[in-house]
Image (cartoon, rainbow over all chains, first blue to last red; front, side, top):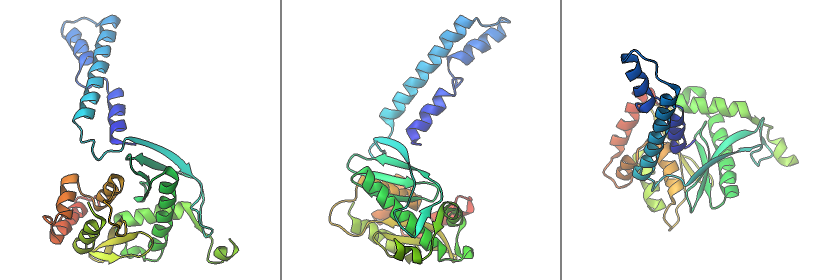
Length: 169
Length: 93
């Protein structure tokens, strides 16, 4: 999920973020009265308007030069290799930078780039296979914290059908 | 940024072994353990595109200013190693 989407989700689900509704409820509490539904509704609207303003402000002040214009996800069911298969489909992330699309599987920090979605996905598949081969050839004791986790993730989803599968492909 | 500048910085400032393949990848090795892997394009004359640069930056665990310093020489190899050791001691790597 992109940083911007995270922010929007946070604001949408955090209506008490220091704005209207909380103030109305607190004032009513101090005055010994219960806030009316109408007041709370009005305050909630202010809260949402304030949050929307914050999001807009973030968008215009954030360094958008390096941020993708669009982020979405798709699932892939294979790795494009006869020898290496996916045991189950995985959800990958795609980022559109205008002149280039980047496909990634953040679980293992593998990525590939290309001019089209298909090129980027194919480059990612190549990187996933390469990473699996590289990690498989190293003893676990030689792997740091993250590469060990990457290997565990890849071992769960990649099936190595052995060298003979290359010949039968 | 040119691919050769990025490749030169990665190859000279990160400790570890360079891999092979269609794309270049390098394992960053500290104290005998592989801690990070960075993939970067083979040399072309054209500038590296933004998406690729961002992906390389994230793999190196650098913010944008640090990445500029890393490529432009003001961050040395030992500075980068110190940065990685800080991340390791904080439990991120």
